Image 1 (cartoon, rainbow, N blue to C red):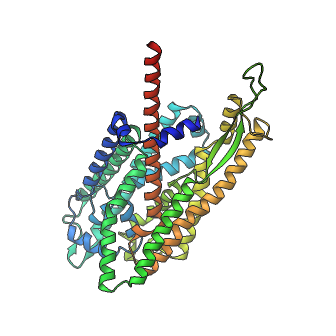
Image 2 (cartoon, rainbow, N blue to C red):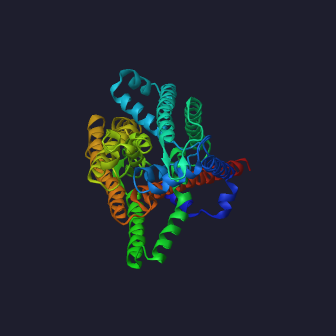
Image 3 (tube, helix red, strand yellow):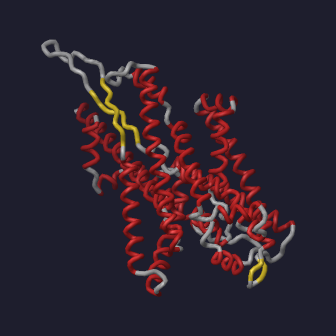
Amino acid sequence: MSSAVEQLASGFSFSTFSKAEDLKKRIVFTLLALIVYRFGTYIPLPGVNAAVIQEFAASNSGGLFGILDMFSGGAISRMTIFALNIMPYISASIIVQLMTSISPHLEALKKEGESGRKKINQYTRYGTVLLASVQAFGIAVGLEKMTVGVGSAVVMPGFLFKFSTIVTLTGGTLFIMWLGEQITSRGIGNGTSLIIYSGIVANLPQSFYKTFVSAREGAISTGLLIFIMAMVAVVIGYVVFMEKAQRRILIQYPKRQVAVDRPATSQSTHLPLKLNSSGVIPPIFANSLLLFPATIAGFSGTANPDSWLGMFVTYMSHGKPLYMFFSTALIVFFAFFYTAIVFNPTETAENLRKMGTFIPGIRPGKATADYIDYVMTRLTVIGSVYLASVCLLPELILSKVSLPFYFGGTSILIVVSVTIDTISQMQSHLVAHQYEGLIKKAKMKGRL
């Protein structure tokens, strides 16, 4: 079976792709959806002075505001209808998934299958509306207080501006949430990850241009520029290697008698366990939680350094020890938490037992589940260390030389991981298409 898949995978060509009509439709739908999203990041919020927002963004691009702007694809620095982006939805997903572990009602819904999953998704949507409304209200209040050299950020402050801002920003988040779900079901790849991915990739050319302009003007030395490019290349290679890394557990089928004159033989295969089963979810979740209060603090809390919001912005700046500590802790926590959600050792052991397979030297049932859980725990330890290192070490270096966040470890991890995942899904569709073609040919030969 595995050899057949490898032969099919090695036989990919343009002609094979051109015949896969379903895959082409999915790719076109994904591209159109992402284009619609990118258009939305340029539609300005009603009643906002764009010149004031640009000046504020330029003066605060090096802190948490810059990270927020990176995840929103530049929508915050332009203060558009998609300024909140997908982050409220991610935060709501975190809260609901955490509640699933402690709430008997939600845990029972999770075990109900598809119907329970739909109800949990509905609760997540309600939470998204609530969180987006709170964040939108904080932004509206902060914008009314914002005044820079060119004037006030809001043309006509008051209740009407607050109401329209809350409705517009919340509606923008809900639209992005719906768009991500459509990409996941009707397109290629994970919709939420692709939306964040497209925002980062869209701003990469501008970041490269600014970096080379700084080098040409002497703000960055040639040696430092070469070191940064080399570091980015090393991080990309590191991410590709770790994302492809697997721990293959040997599993065997029981001995079967093929023929009377031949001895019974047993077949073996592997159970592949990824080193990083959680993907890019832990860094996205960690940044979402860290940036949730910063969404409000970046607009209103910085005016008063003695307030808790002002102190949060001060001590949680990029590259600061407190930021590094909380970011690492959250990445490690969500690596274990999300792996426990997406992978169930007991269910895997039960499936192996039903198929009549077993791990050599391990008894079926609970012993197999315990062994798989032991292996996954060790893999997750390594995976969480990998995620923390690739997200924090490059960004710590870049924070010392004041370069764009788009060269940081988190952005590189998201871009590379989402690209690998999307290509893998495309290959799966091509393999399925080739199998369908082989089956049709076999049926036609059988009729002849």
